[in-house]
Amino acid sequence: MLSLSSPLQCLPSNMFMKPLKKLMVNSRNSHLRIVINSSSSDMPSSSSSDFMSFRQMNMPSLGLSSNNDCASKQSYKWQRVLLKVSGEALAGDNMQNIDPKVTMAIAREVASVARLGIEVAIVVGGGNIFRGSTWAGCSGLDRSSADYIGMLATVMNAIFLQATMESIGIPTRVQTAFRMSEVAEPYIRRRAIRHLEKGRVVIFAAGTGNPFFTTDTAAALRCAEINAEVVLKATNVDGVYNDDPRRNPNAQLLDTLSYQDVTSKELSVMDLTAITLCQENNIPVVVFNLNKEGNISRAIKGERVGTIIGGHLNSAVAEIQ
Image 1: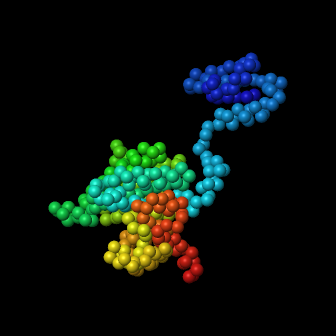
Image 2: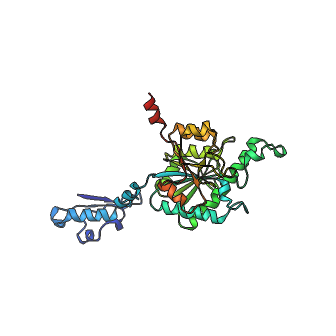
Image 3: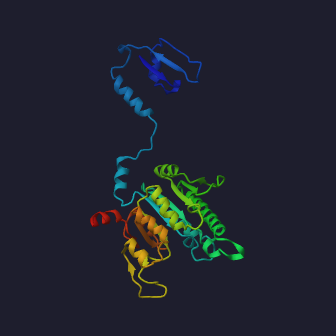
């Protein structure tokens, strides 16, 4: 006996060429239940192969990657990355708060790697519009209120970047650390991971949702939460130097650094909370120049660009023990 609980149109056309022996209609639901009694003589000689081909034809698509896609993803160093874009970088030449040319350049480079199957999440800063630590104390503005205003600035940047990315066909979701349901999704870890798995770019806005924490800390936190493999910090310089290159023309670009180097030498790469969080979770940090064409895509693919910080804390501890 072959029993099908589905609408009539789901049945192959050759099923109606045989007389129906029994028809049952279930009135308790909207589906039509058909039970067909058929002997082996009623079925075609190649019934098993026909049924399998029919089953494959009507199987829903699960969105699984093909072997070729998997092979292409295996060739890249990172499979899931978190890109940290500072607010100052979005300002471009500082003639306006947001430079559309900069956001379009970011969108195109992210799109080029997203289409290769690499999962990309982005954390944006808000310093191009409002920096809480700078404005705290002005006109009686306390630090907490100033930081909340700065968080709202990151949401503005995120929505602008989302619109730019979707204009070139890249599906994008903005998630905020506190609820702003009319303009963005609330941050939900599992939902963010699911968006990434479906090939969508996820932009995290509003920092951590708490005052006294920078967007660098938010980048390290979100990276650890979504199991990303690296934090890519896009800045206006080529990487980390042993001295300020704007004051010292002989300053040297450093290729690699340890977490301890950053903290002990007080290098202004990330704040102490962010770099410590990366160290505890073995998250490498790549610092590179956003303004050089192709740098974003090269960094996301894992190519040598800028300065790479840390990433091997546990192995080093194991050797010492």
